[in-house]
Length: 168
Image (tube, rainbow, N blue to C red; front, side, top):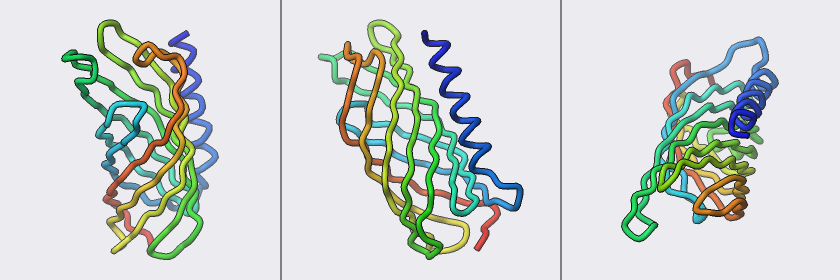
């Protein structure tokens, strides 16, 4: 089951990447973000940001630690990707998109969970090489996570990105 889930996530990531990347020039950068959700552990994430207006593809990974189980430490490692669609070409760019994340949970036993997070947000570009933004969405999770097979709740992310190419 876990292997099929990993293959499905990787196939979806490749399909989104292929759909989002036209053959002409693109801008690339590195993004640092903080993922917050009442139905999962707060996580720090790092990803590669591939921007070709109006699409942005972000493969990412992250890690979170929590003491929510009466003194036991819960560790979560996440891999996944996001696809966003910019709605404007101005310095303040609203966007809509979704993240698909696979969480590996290490507590009393090892579990895994797949999360799908459709979201809306905005990204502000003070110059051509740097941006920061935030989004909010609904997180739907499937798989073992705190002895729960299904989770539903809000999710928010704040992020900052440094771009290497600096397209304008």
